[in-house]
Length: 227
Image (cartoon, rainbow, N blue to C red):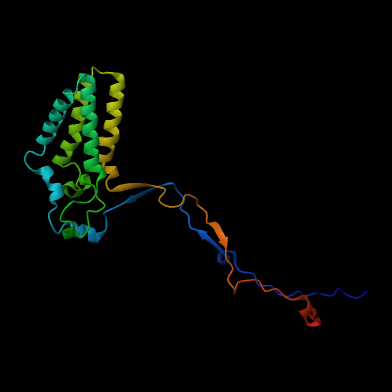
């Protein structure tokens, strides 16, 4: 009995899977938290000139203007026909919280002389610019206390109505307290900053001319391939 004969088949060259399939790189999370304004060159640019956009909070009368605006808004809202004291104080509180959040925690950058600082304040809110970002300064303590005092006043004049109390408390927490916490200083929460999936999903198989598998013509196979 003759020994089995080994047969050699023609060699086929196939492209590597990672080279032949084009995919999109995906991040692994829906929510991304990143810090802004911490580069060395930005710190140097901020120290070059005085930031008049944030220094006004330390000027004379800057604290009193909050009280004046609250009472002015209260007088204007009371002129609306049929307005009750409960709704009036609630509106004053909500409007003050919304405007203060928009001014101190939403808008970034400075409106003038931005070229002097080389855009170092472009990613920072007004709250983050005050006192060069230092925490627990007198101005920041007042800005933290003012909405709490207004909340207590609105709670008292609404006769401790549970529904209005819940609305005022939720607004105070979301718009005035949480954004001012030191743990959130210069922190940004990005939603869907990149694609959500954690894997690279192939889009289109792409074979270049050099990567295409070499196909052999059956008629070209000779006895030499089986030796």
